Amino acid sequence: MLERIAMRVSEARKKLEELSYNVEGFSKLEFYNYMTGETPTGDVYTLENILENEYLMLHEVVEISELKKKDVPIDKQTIMKFHPKVYEAHLTAAEYELTYAFNRKNYDWIKLRLKHAKDWLEDEYLPHELLPQCKYLIERFSKLVRSKERRGEFME
Image 1 (cartoon, helix red, strand yellow):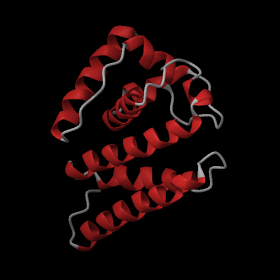
Image 2: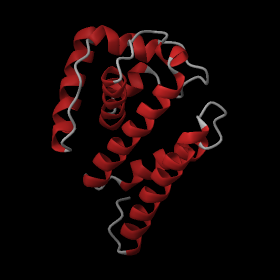
Image 3: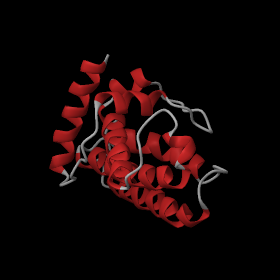
Image 4: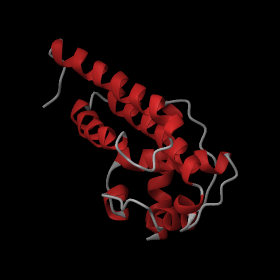
């Protein structure tokens, strides 16, 4: 499992280079522990779901990288102990994930993730100061997808 994680992280790192994102180093064990750690809300995605999806992998690599850049220790308790910083990292990761999907013209993925993002607005744990950033992200990518749909560039 750890070797598979290392391979998938390496693939995500290369994709992020295309977006000029500098990935902070972390170990495959840190990735595993973060993905299997405790969360206050209960995640809808499993480690297997994440490893199988290039967009989710990219998202998680950015999220962990952002936390490492803030000197947050990555382990099974990170999400519970560093709550506001995790949300900041999550929103940054979502922006890179959606940008990557947009560049690949995967508008269906963006629409799916925007449905989840609207739930973030009702998340009782979302720090109030991050609400404008979350709304902006949803509005920005919703407008981009609508624009492509109007032009007939939407992939089914």
